[in-house]
Image 1 (cartoon, rainbow, N blue to C red):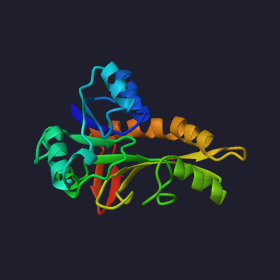
Image 2 (tube, helix red, strand yellow):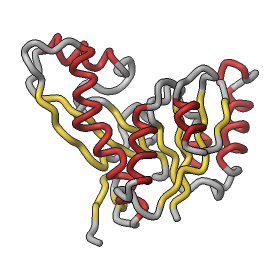
Image 3 (cartoon, one colour):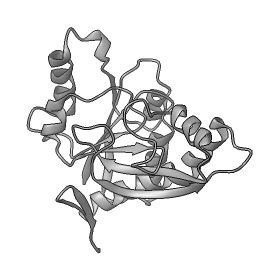
Image 4 (cartoon, rainbow, N blue to C red):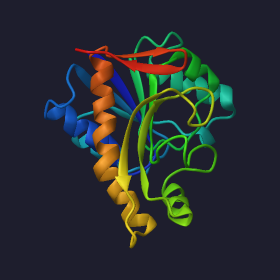
Length: 212
């Protein structure tokens, strides 16, 4: 059984998509053991509580330094050797993870990004800002990407991508909603299911998805 810790900062719609997928059997052989929020007022915490999932709040701002923050996170995740958590899922998590966590969980941290990487990604591209830039550039296709997290910003090996059409009358808000509904909420659970089944391998900074 794949033991997942989900990291959140806001509303938790992607967390809900994972919960739903586990409950309806779309994601097999996996469970969410813990939800960690960077904010005490994140609605994602209520979603987790409603599903009977253990939660905690760890704020970078409330830690004296990065070392203290890293220790708190590692303790919650299961220790320096990463034995407590099999997979970390960043689902709208707005805090940069310390290098020590990335090393402890190499190729065991995944993120969902609301664009087709390498387009509209990297520093400054998050949330609604991504969709604002997509519309400014007149792009016809956007989408979402699930990727492993490395020490760069949206630079880790790509696992899955799904394209979404940009409509002429789109606003950043309508486009964000459609990308979530048509791409994010579908490929994030699918990626977790593939990992739970041992079908995702990383070779030379690229993912290889094998058969059943």
